[in-house]
Image (cartoon, rainbow, N blue to C red):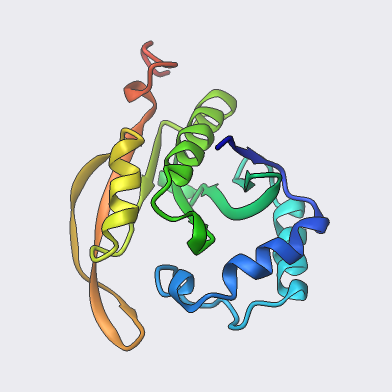
Length: 178
């Protein structure tokens, strides 16, 4: 299966709504997403991503089999962390466990490192989400530790794991950073 990341278009809203209108998908994401997730919610999100500063927000649709099956983004927090960025992603449940997200993570990291001054990309999956942790490990991220009692999701206090990939860890970049 060929997996690609590409810029969003407003025509992707229906596929986005289909992927996010699944409680099992949303249970692995941060709060704040409407449920059910509608096409209008998708259009609003896509519009925001298209309007975002392209040096601060790197947001893409994840595609396979000719349609959008998920979302992936790298977001720069700013201030003293301005050369780091947080990775977030999800895919429709029917594509879980097929290597799709590992491919998308590798693609976005290569893109961000090649097209920005970011030197570190990190992700904080819920510690109970073994599949997401495995995606990061397969994509070359290093486990840095567990963030104890770091979130409240669905009424439960949960731990999160910290993973990071440095620009110097990638095959594309072996020079001294300036």
